[in-house]
Image (cartoon, rainbow, N blue to C red; front, side, top):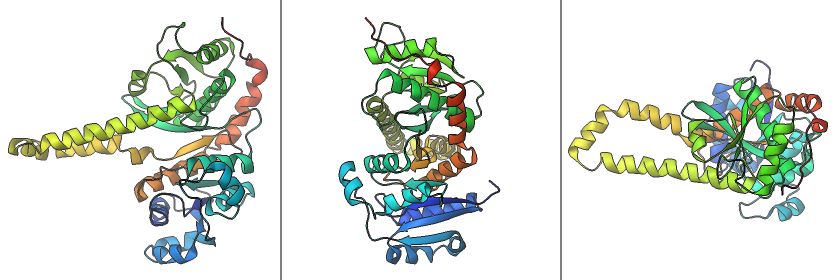
Length: 348
């Protein structure tokens, strides 16, 4: 990144805000020296934290508001009562063009609702989707939707495939990504009607990616395809299950290597390899899910992350801006628009 980019930060969103937001911005500043941050939140809480990061001071502008959206607040309530909240004001900065993107670790439902109402969706997109990269044994894949749309129809799933492929093309540099539909089996006759309808639409469409067909849960770790398409309910459950499994096996390893003196010595001898493994599967490295399909860059950080994780979420926003992801998506949609994608029909 060589040109200055401004990112709006919801300084009051997340379990450990505003500390992790300010500390994360300081870490991100080291990685992106041309980045500038608009911090929306309580200046009485933010200013003392900034004093610990003198190199960040010239890259931050505080926009004071004492109001914040709580983690328990329902999206509809947040929309009505949160007009002056740190989350809404940060989104407004993107809408007005003052910021190129927004990052928040706050309430996911409220963030999606506010962003969708304020920024609207891109032309040709009915619903935005939450998308994030996931590590595989062959590199990285991307999965969507991870929770924005609990119920989806076949048309939504096809649009998610187009959004995910555009993400893979711009961010991963894959010229012709492979797209797969997550299902209960690889056979064409398996799965719900919606998934089978979407598969039929993919096969009949002329799109700038290769449709692989159905994929299963164990294909995620294998990296069978570049883009995994799934409804938001299943995607969110899958994401949490993968994260929980990583934590479980990390705990198993810790207990195993503490079980005896020989085990402790073995761990010491292999400590370098284990550090590399931990770094590779560290969920903080992959923190930062993009709300793809909105007319603006919106990145959701995990609410319980630390400064390192939040810095990576900021990095996602900067990368989305640098890759001009929305312009690319609109060009893709214009060239391979809905007129080339058959509408869903009932499968008998």
